[in-house]
Length: 162
Image 1 (cartoon, rainbow, N blue to C red):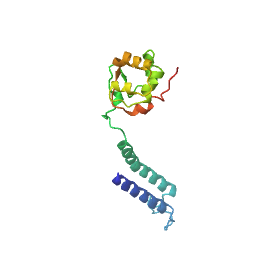
Image 2 (cartoon, one colour):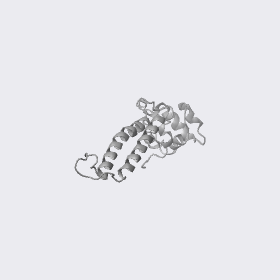
Image 3 (cartoon, rainbow, N blue to C red):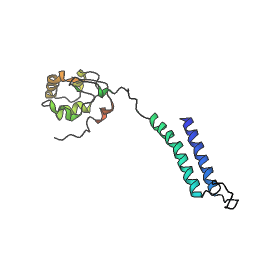
Image 4 (tube, rainbow, N blue to C red):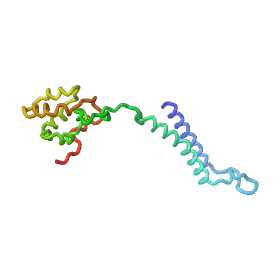
């Protein structure tokens, strides 16, 4: 990262120097016997300078952006196969509609608490009613627990139409 900043700083300083030279008045008069470089206009010099600078800076910018990407093989818990079960740490409240009686009250209690280390942890939720406990026991085999991932905090706020 430090090397990239040094390279970019050097490029910027060289560009400023070339820009300043583009506005220095020519000392020799234009005419026959002059090289094409001596006859170049300020617009030509600036255009060439911008093209050169962008050709050097684009790969550097891509290298910086590439270093911030997620690893392709990164472990994301919510992407694990759940064998058709509901992961208590990543299932959205609306997902529980498939389990009769769970949505919205019991599902909301599950999503509002956690993270869970085991399925049995749902029985420790404060404020459970007798009906909630019966529903949890009824569907306990439908639940699984994976480590919480990115979606843990989004479980409640997912858009759900009732």
